[in-house]
Structures are given as structure tokens and as C-alpha cells.
Length: 94
Ligand SMILES: [Zn+2]
Image 1 (cartoon, rainbow, N blue to C red):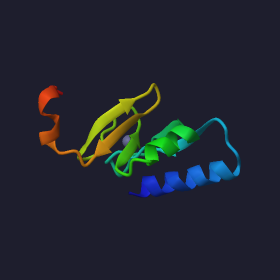
Image 2 (cartoon, helix red, strand yellow):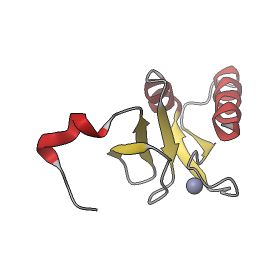
Image 3 (tube, protein in one colour):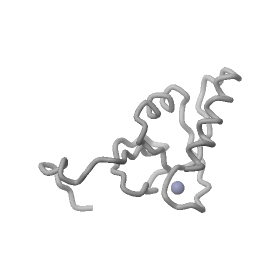
């Protein structure tokens, strides 16, 4: 995932520059041509990255094999690696 690597670099740079507000990150959805930028605060980014299989995407963009974990006004967090079996009780139609 190139977008992810790029975002890690952006976050590193932002930390060096002591950014306190939000940082432009690349959407990490499955569309290779997607160049959407989402604004994420550094602390949120670090928190999201604690979970290795999470993807930050623009609103409405989907990450392959990942389910929507949370949503803010600016971006969505998707989480991969969760098998269908685990979600039995709360099945929702898309
Ligand atoms: Zn996207």
C-alpha cells in the first residue's frame, strides 16, 4: 500500500515540524488511482495506526476486505482482517 507508506512519511515530517493541527493524508482506499486527500490530526493518525490493519479513507471510499470501523466528518476508518463469522449478531444490509 503506497498511500500508507506516504502517509507514514507525512506523519513523520509533520512531527518533526511540530504540526499541531490536522495533516493532509492520502486516502487509503482500494482504488489505485485515488488521489483524494483527507485531513487527519496527528494524534488521531497515531491512534489509528496502532491498529495495523486499519485504513484511512475519504468518506464513502472503500478498502478491500475491510469493514467500516468509525467515521468522522472528514474521513472513515476501515479495518481489515475481520472475518464474516464474527459479526453474526449484527448483520446489516448495505
Ligand atoms: Zn479513495
